[in-house]
Image 1 (cartoon, rainbow, N blue to C red):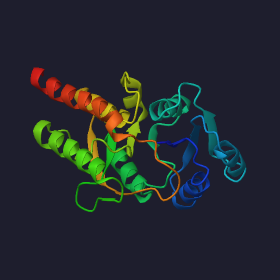
Image 2 (cartoon, one colour):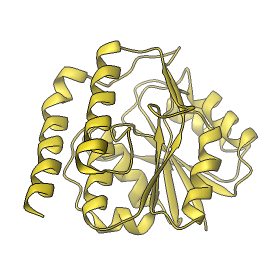
Image 3 (cartoon, rainbow, N blue to C red):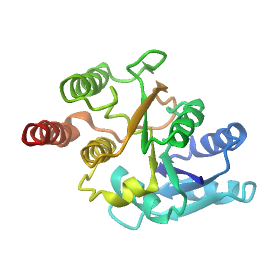
Image 4 (spheres, rainbow, N blue to C red):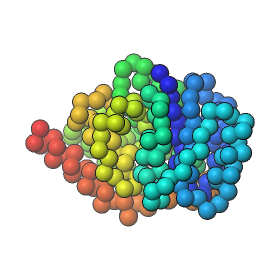
Length: 232
């Protein structure tokens, strides 16, 4: 199976070369790396073009829709031709070691593999305690109440088979896309697994994740999942 890594990047000039070099140095699974330039106003795109001369498997694409995480990810999905997809954050917060474990699970027959921070050997290091509390609460409650087979449903670090993405009508407009896809996939009958991962707060640049602005979107999905179970 072919693997594609999607990196959404908005003004990530301080991080983008580091994350590309780390992926290319560490990952021995054949892959394509798609960097989605999300309306950057710094040198992100220029840096990707420069480093792509060193690595032939890198493609730079532009998010031509409204700026934002979901549109950047959807742009990456649209340009992907591989069988398996994993978004990786440009701020180096995701543990690249997890990709190999995710890919093993995909090869075992799972359709989505979630990087889980709130299980044995997983961790969330740094960052807002409020964000951590709510993401843990949502993941644990959906796991125990509804049987959703991951305890970290909100984490963006997930690996998907392409046919899962093709099967879902994505409605999200923000970071909640990472929760929408696995929830809808679960109710469509796709197989979901989780592996532990360690998430670290970024050390360079500024995050665009706004917890209180996005909270209503997460709540809507949370209630949708519960309602879906009640009428099933």
